[in-house]
Length: 240
Image (cartoon, rainbow, N blue to C red; front, top):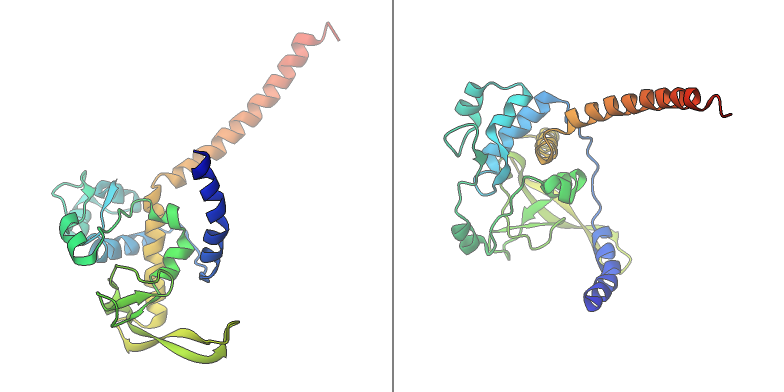
């Protein structure tokens, strides 16, 4: 155990340095925007559930977004037979591991693990790389096994060298759109924002209700504190 703790302490600065090398773009998330969540859910089931599962998220929870059971069944259920079932991947894990070298992870709580800014940057950082088995690479997650699932929306980006130099004297590289997709860059960024918004919501569907309940609890405790204070004064008035 001591050796494990020592190794973790030694690796911590290296991990911090590695994470700081990637500059993340900021995205404003609003899990109370139901229209955004509906659009994000549509993108998620059409482009993500084919390979990734969301094993802790039931289709029926989409009713909290203002959708009816009929709308969910007819438009959003790509796997499963009943809305009470979870979002299981259409791709078998053994096949995925054979094709991509690693089984795609479950995405239920990926937003809580990685963060919204990381997901937003990652989904916009794919570029064509013939040296990779899938033909794709990512500046946020180098040598990623995942191909660009949203390429038909974004188009194909390439990594180009710019005129500016980094601190080592190498030419800085940047992403440039080589082949446009179905959406303009601005529209694609909006679609990714909706998708990330939904993934944040999916990580804790009850977070809005939890926050409201927390406010009620705080008001209750505040009132209880006042009541307890005057009750204490009444009990101790003869002694003081």
